[in-house]
Image (cartoon, rainbow, N blue to C red; front, side, top):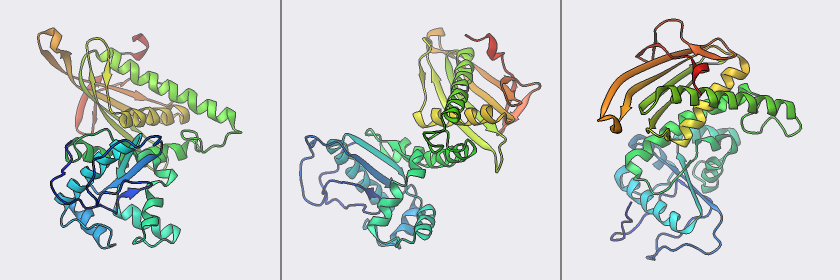
Length: 306
């Protein structure tokens, strides 16, 4: 990502939280010695949200395209100045409800900063490492918000066991949740090991009180077993599996995609496997499954995968 130094920068003030570099004066960004604070920014992810946020007088860009360019500049400078840079979707409706709940004025910068670092929403934060903002990163921010809502639901079902809300004194509860989380991670690992090299997507649904828990993750697996998956997607899959196993909830999972690798002369075969859970464990589905429009045959036994 290149910084657009040839034009005057605008500060997309509606999105910045915590310490931030001064952008209006020309300068050459450099890392500040001893800078150890995180930089947190909220990003408006579509033109409609941009227009809605302007009603609070917090954005001075003339249109959404310029807003994204200005935000890219702000992030580029932040990477030079802070050890950690994180972003999350700035959702106008969420922000408005947050302000109403806490009796805040949405036009005040302090309200936006409180919204961005609100602890219950920290699961929506993504680490920013220089990605093209308008490319894959903005869609990831949208998914991170959706994932964060699911993570919050799972955490509430587990009485705060996922993110420490259960309290430090309840050691038994913490061990119970950690054990279920490890089991869930192992279920996912065995699904991938059994599939072998390829490009896949996992779709997962667990029937839970107050609504279904759903997760989806794209996975690239090489011949040597190395797996590429977004951290936030891995966190969500393991959390949903954890909640399902801990509370013995029924669920279904489908792993589908192209099985094979470039090392095998570029031969790829379509594949789709399905598993189900009655609560305490996951096993091959008893019959063919269709989940979110994807048809899959019963999967392989996870107990036979090392």
